[in-house]
Image (cartoon, rainbow, N blue to C red; front, top):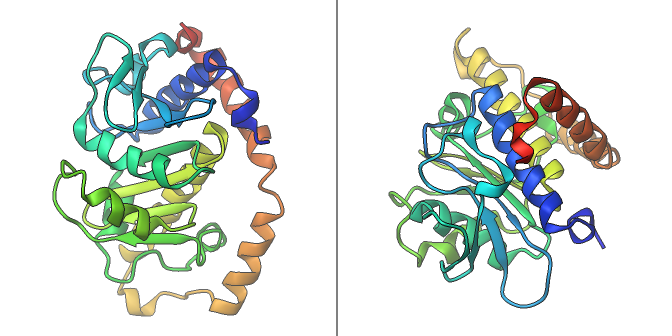
Length: 247
């Protein structure tokens, strides 16, 4: 049993709303676009919380989140959602039982890396967490076609993150804490790559060897339990700044 199974819907709503507020604080938002979702506990067809279309990330409260099923039917909530967001998120929730939370961003650094033929380079300790744990999905246009869900699932496979080429980043986790922490460091890895690229040719970058990258990645796996500790620190920070996300 994982943390998501132990949380109530109220707690999941608050965690997801907190993730939106923190994302706004970190500059991850793209006006009304990009989405975070979390699967609600319970048997049967997956139901998940997602942001209503029309609210900026820094406006979202726990009570604003709408409940949608895997077929796109709104089960709870008084607002619509973004179709492209539904396509991407439902694809992951339907295919991965462990992907309780899915986060998708359009940050400058993430989109810049998604435009690179070589993808994420092993340039830094932060990058190595994603060694052999990152999928790549070719661009097919705005994600309005539900048939693309199968290909998104295949591209993600069992990885913790997905690079949507010419688009952005996606991360998954067993909890909001997991997915948020993975996105935080994936975006940091992209920022490092973008900064390094601005200093010279990619061919001159000093990359970490495959063998060493694999070793450091295994080290990161041993401390994944710390994501919950870090998440509690994020929540304390948000509580000091603006606790209205819980409303």
